[in-house]
Image (cartoon, rainbow, N blue to C red; front, side, top):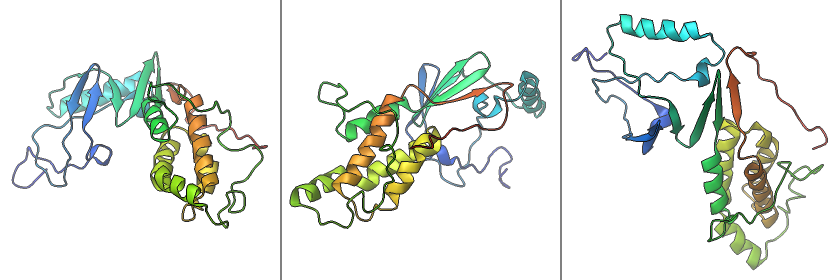
Length: 231
């Protein structure tokens, strides 16, 4: 609480800074860019199965009771279905997080969606070229670019595309981590082959766009991951 106003609070919500809207249920709410030190008289507590999926329902009830004991008026605005590009689906006792809309938008910026909205890329089942490490040699980083390739690389905007894919990797799709990290090591010397490797990752994400991370209440708290050793 601020010293001069017991009902004001200093708030900082990094995931929402500069974002336009948050969708709750079927209604979208505008979110102003919050600055440190802004004074507010209303605090919104967002409680989601995403972070509480492993805990029993009683802990949800205890949390609500605890907030009410502080004299807070609570209103249920309904389930959060979309926030900063994350799509949230709920079933009984589970929550699924995906980035389908972001994948579709990123595919369009890479030229994988035509003017009619049809996907024209390939279907990929591995995020990288099978049995091939992405090195400066395999990406052609030490070779001079032809004028045509130099123009293509410039228009491709490697750093922006890599940044967008890294966000998806950190958020929902750890399977693309290895090729993206290998590509990032050579981003200062972009080539046509490097752009093609990023496109390959994007085509893989398109292929698996209906998948995501699923959290199940009562499940194990440890993450289990799998690696294609041959890849």
